[in-house]
Image 1: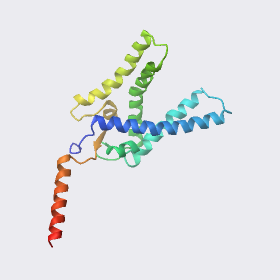
Image 2 (image 1 turned 90 degrees about the vertical axis):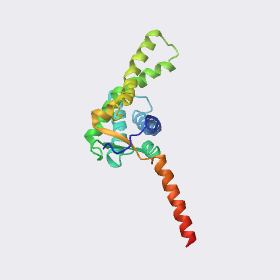
Image 3 (image 1 turned 30 degrees about the horizontal axis):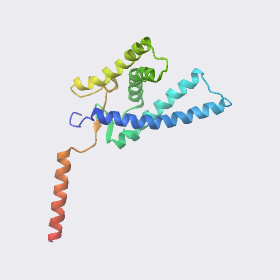
Image 4 (image 1 turned 45 degrees about the vertical axis):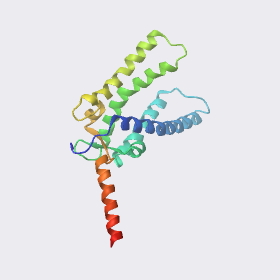
Length: 186
């Protein structure tokens, strides 16, 4: 599938941010249900965290396996496909989700250090160590010939751009205005 343009890192990050906002709403709903089931008390039971992870997986995998686009991907005109140009399977979705979670979850936890009022040097070292794999996972795209991140490679997937190149869009606009003027001449 080399003929499909690869989605830029900017579009990927914007779509990810958009999807995380949507996912946050879903996770808050699940958390509200958990608190209600627990008679108004917060829960720290391990099953609760497994439900949150499973909810996040189903959120992404459902979109990826159906149309190849989450709502954020749709907004930023990118699509996920397999290396062979097909829709993802649930197995590929699981591999992609797991690989991305393993890389990005420690980074998210490391970023929490910024909001810790009792910041310490050991916390800073932890934050740097936690963020490093995510940075390498994304920076890898700049060195990879197909511009794939680690989780793309592990799951045999790629994000393609559905946005028309500027030249093609300009040509289409010019052809449309020429056709309109020819119709008015008739």
